[in-house]
Image (cartoon, rainbow, N blue to C red):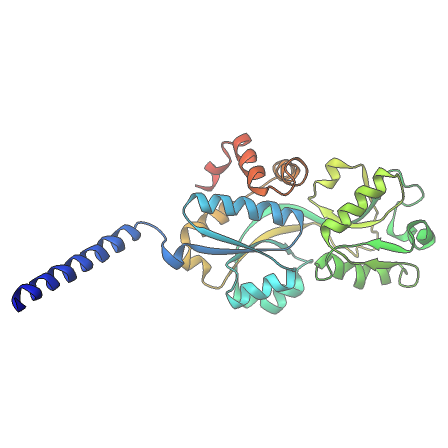
Amino acid sequence: MFNTLKRVLAVAVTATLALGAVACSEKSDGPSGSDKKITIGYMAWDEAIAVSHLWQHILEEKGYQVQLKNLEAGLVYGGLASGDIDFFLDGWLPQTHASYLEKYGDKLEKLGVWYEGASLSIAVPAYVEGVESLADLAGKADTFGGEIIGIEPGAGLTKATQEKVLPGYGLDGAMKLKTSSTPAMLAALDGAITDRKPIVVTLWHPHWAYAKYELKDLADPKGTLGAAEQINTFGRKDFGKDFPEVTKMLQQFKMDSQQLASLEDLMFNTHKGDEKKAVEEWLKANPDYLKALA
């Protein structure tokens, strides 16, 4: 009886070990367990929202578990530096996010540039007369209620406007920057244009608003908003070593203005609030796009 019980237990243990070996063998073919989990950080700039949801879809189709974290820019960079965020697709260089790179750069990996020619701007609707330059705002402050409608307090665009534009053009006493959020700024812009009222907002290229509305960027003769920039992808330290397949794909990731504008239009106008549907429709309309990432 005792020997029989020993044999039964031995068979059970052997079977358990065999099952474990099979499971390990099956998992070895690709990323598994914690190796499948990726966190993408993004700030509430529309290109960041659009491409982050695009990459969530791309990676989930490959079997990864993807979590998106929406944070202000400084918190995204801090999360990358601490390892809580795996990668971020909206790093503006050499100017807008320079301070974050100075602080966290040695703890990040640069994975690639996916968009060229990005730029910060301050804009008004095209129907607004008598304002062509940032230098014109001081004399027209009352036209805009003494306010520039801005976005998130932690954005690089906000910092540039507060620290360079306002003092650079003598606007400190005449106008103030009203920080809010990107959606709130866009809602204010849409409402003003609907009522054909004057408004001045902080904005940037690339952005779908330039396709939807007739807008006028105010000239910046003093260069307070900087020159054209690149949009970069950054990973946490050792991301390339931990996720070589994903890193290779990110290094090959590119979008031009038309591609990005069409994705944003689907996401923010056609399928408001349904990012997954927008991405699926965009990829269906661009069937060859994923081949470049393979």
